Length: 152
Image 1: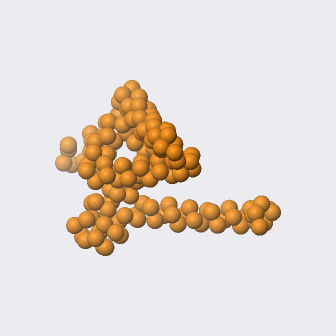
Image 2 (image 1 turned 60 degrees about the vertical axis):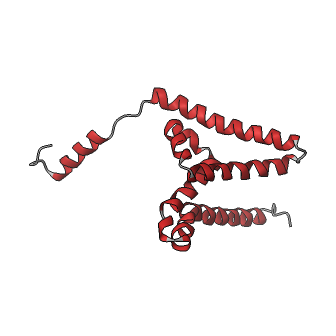
Image 3 (image 1 turned 30 degrees about the vertical axis):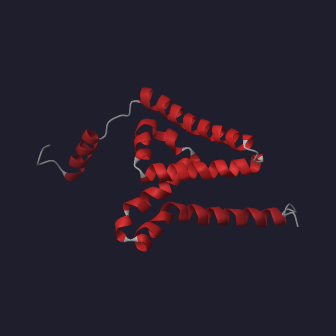
């Protein structure tokens, strides 16, 4: 790099050198494969739980719980990140990706203690999702009530 280059050009030069194009021919099929395997695991768990005698509703809930717990466990063990390096966007299947996104910040700040570290950072991602989810459900409920669809 030229030491006499203006800062903006120097920065753009650094960005250009540091960023490389992703090999889409490899990333897209791997994301599809890994995402599909996660979904297939969920489907397999659903069949397992229904074959054990659970209703479809209970089995579906247990599948969600299992996938969340498995994703959190794999994140804690450092395995989920290795899978994400191979599967990329395929690991963002909503329930497992969300569990990973919740656990990761909590692990990063565990040295700050259980309350101010892990506890506080656990909801860095989930907090806004919960707040906006609850707010959206209230707005939807009020609109449905005004339109006579409120069920009351």
